[in-house]
Image 1 (cartoon, each protein chain N blue to C red):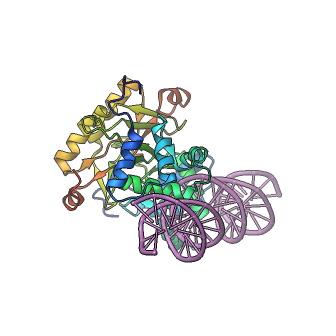
Image 2 (spheres, rainbow over the protein chains, first blue to last red; image 1 turned 180 degrees about the horizontal axis):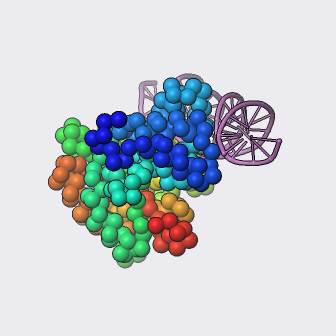
Image 3 (cartoon, each protein chain N blue to C red; image 1 turned 120 degrees about the horizontal axis):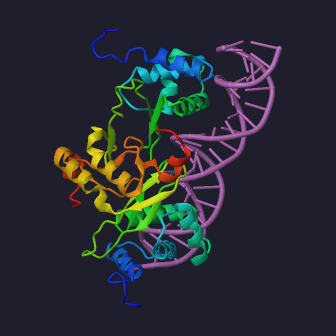
Amino acid sequence: MDDADNTLEARVPAALDMLRQRGERVTKARRAVLEVLDGTEDHLNADEIAGQASTKAPGVHRATVYRALSTLRELGLVSHTHVGGAATVYHLTFLEPGRQRGGHAHVQCTTCSRVIDVPSDVLDPLTTRLQRDLDFRLEPQHAALLGICAACRATQPMT
Amino acid sequence: MDDADNTLEARVPAALDMLRQRGERVTKARRAVLEVLDGTEDHLNADEIAGQASTKAPGVHRATVYRALSTLRELGLVSHTHVGGAATVYHLTFLEPGRQRGGHAHVQCTTCSRVIDVPSDVLDPLTTRLQRDLDFRLEPQHAALLGICAACRATQPMT
DNA sequence: CTGCTTGCAAAGTGTTTGCAGGCCC
DNA sequence: GGGCCTGCAAACACTTTGCAAGCAG
């Protein structure tokens, strides 16, 4: 509860309020999922969320986690990112209206599978152009961008 | 053999030659996969490739198609694109050295799942910046970019 | 002939769904 | 107490793998 970096403290209670507001029920499973997501910087996949949630709420089932994530996503509380060929990862959507940085985009190395976070503004030119040319609203963090990182390129002499 | 648009004609024979050069065997299944990919503008997933290949070479098994695609990918003859939450799609890599446009990137609507091809130069600023800042070599067509298309945005009042 | 490739089946992920019972409101 | 949510199991979609037989070189 160190008040250092949390203008956005109490995200879990706020999310639970949102649930109630929308007429959704506040259940042990949903609370556990939110707490897990609130308690990590990493992007976790459904399995990992289920694992961690089990310690908070014994018995939560994978299927329930998927359903909870689906509901929370529909409400805009949770976002997910498709990573290349692997399980989708989830993270809490920032709730603060003023703080709509939209998070960072994800760049993933196809060789070592490492995910690198990049500031979302790297994608701004692309976002702008897609919107202008195609009226397409890009969601920069919704899919990981793939390529080869410096380390792996050093190993592989492929151009 | 209309010489209009094919400085890159005869891609299948060229690919088969490449196989032989590398000591890989030229089999019915591999030839069928190459022919299917050569005969379409679309990006097909493994299942669709297997389906179409079956008409050319009856009996080709899905597993064989996966293995063939894997081999062809390792040789650089085939590329694949991860699309959001759906089966990976494959396409023939352009063989002509002079014609290395790298194809187009793919933009996919998360609502209607439609895939829109965009010229790869839309991604150039991003590619450049990632290379400069992170020494990361982006493969623009390796993953589809996700967002919401104009049509679906009209339907959904979501910001 | 040698052994790379295939066909088949089965297992392995990741995710969804039908149903009966349980808990939130 | 009504009905949304959950747990469970089973199904589903996509992909990989072990093994014996087949065909390319």
